[in-house]
Length: 338
Image (cartoon, rainbow, N blue to C red; front, side):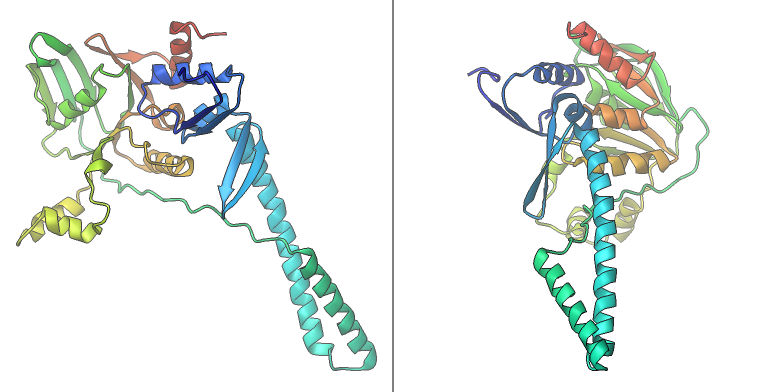
């Protein structure tokens, strides 16, 4: 059955696609003429495809008209009005209850007024009071500032790499990464983006050329398959005890206290919702270290990256423009412009 033969339901639509596939999917679904239900953590994708947003909270569904940005704005306005109404009602209730408690057994005139307020209060409660706004819980990230190292901190000098000598992924590439670098790696699947990160960390070694790292450089890496290796039934403490058995307290402390100068993030948003992605972006922008990012999330790249590097045809080249310019380039390349 064709994907678009009938009404469609897509879960986390971007999945593990590269940016070119994401652009194709978004542009194709824009013109999909049947019912489409999408679950996605990509705000850029939702803005491009969706005409309505359903918000799920406390076992209730609320329908909003418009794309994701319009939903955010409308919801914020409605919640602001709801909070004002809730506060007004609570102030009225508190005032009436105080009056009833003070004058309910006073003079006949005051008692009648107290009874009237009791009836008003009961009527308000029967009619249904405004609920207090419940804010979504958002995970907060924080990266410790570690100061600077004199450049260059990471250099590729005439690096050539392939998993076999007759199938090279990179050939004679030269570049440098410093602590003020904010780089997003883009390119088709299989072009070597994750491989490049492994060359940076030293998990892979060049066939030819050299990767130079500052002697004091500390690198931390998150890759897209890391969560698959975690035992989710185990606490953080038990995990560290398993990884560092016996009397290896110093190693454990060093691992816990490692404050990297540079973060290498390979698809960090696959299991994050939109609010958490925004929280991650905010923390990265406040941090003073270097960043190399691989992501299919155009919005995250736009939030944190200052340089776009294209990995393709055994080369790494800097894109002259931002990620939204690159998105338009991918549309044009796929014949989807206009």
